[in-house]
Length: 494
Image 1 (cartoon, rainbow, N blue to C red):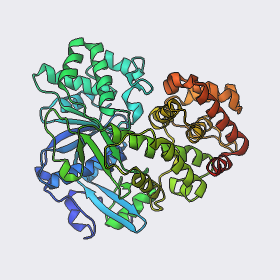
Image 2: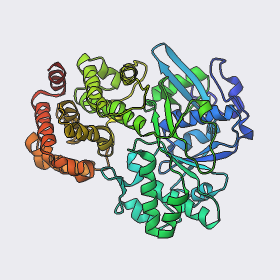
Image 3: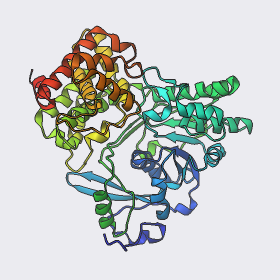
């Protein structure tokens, strides 16, 4: 794409090639009904696409206003494009391009926090949805409770009308609606938290009660926090991706999103102020999301994390690269096999077919999902993805060797030095603490494993379980002795 080429925008949609889908509705008639916190790639490749379909079906009052809690990068890229962007769906057969128009505006929360609170408190806002990642909830993952010592929580409790955190914004907006006699909006969490709706409700009401017990009770009694399960693989967008999309469009798109053909959204049908026709856009509306959530966390997310940590250590850049090694493909399958026995699914659920579909998705050569990207924020992810299944298997006196190797891979990764002695860029809220423990313990499994298992924010009481400690320590010892490739090969060949 030539540097001087025109930018994607509402005025030049008619210049797009006929093969590129574009909004099938008049955007000028769409009004906002959703505020979304966490304007990242996943939201733009998942929930925003569903809302785009709802708008095309006539739900014109459900446009989205997105809020980045910290970085202005997304707004800087999308505002000059009238907040249009391209969804590039990549499969082995080729790439399909679609311009999404559901995002009407975007704000950067830290620039004008009061304006975002006002937007959320507006009666037109009936849903506040979130993809702020696990760490964005300022909670302790092992317990699901608000971390009252978190710096953003401390700040927000002392600056109620100028919050920084997602819970702080939600509570400030709900307090304003209560004061104005307005009903609460629905809080729709789309992050991979255990029982995400119930967890966010607990976090929000705990935060609110620190300000006012009456406010906490009003939120608990009146607001809805439906649980959800979301599933779509969305790699980080690269400069090469931007170039490829811009060439396909004949227009420059500063921030397209890359994804796979598969998408799934399961939502508990519990809303306080209405919702768009989600079912018509392919959303599964159910009374209980928990079985689907555990299925995804323990099959998809757990195996993804195992491939990420062990694959990174073995020198693989992407999940597809990792899956080309048959031993790592078998590792992913074994993680799913161990976890499947801990699940109780509704009648008619075909777990074998789901597992097979995951292996196929991981192997998609057109999807460049980096192991390093998936490895981020492991301290927030391990409890939901790996530790819960390990605890259930231990309760049944079943072996945990495969999950233990995945946890050991995480330990080896957060020590911040790879198998060749090179530094690992560990992105995690507790990265400094892990690095300090690793320096003190050295590359000795019998010292490092107990040190990391003692981090209560990750492992809680489970870290003291003798069978878990033995299995993880032994697995970490194999990683130090043999390296990730040989350790995985030995495990899956046993």
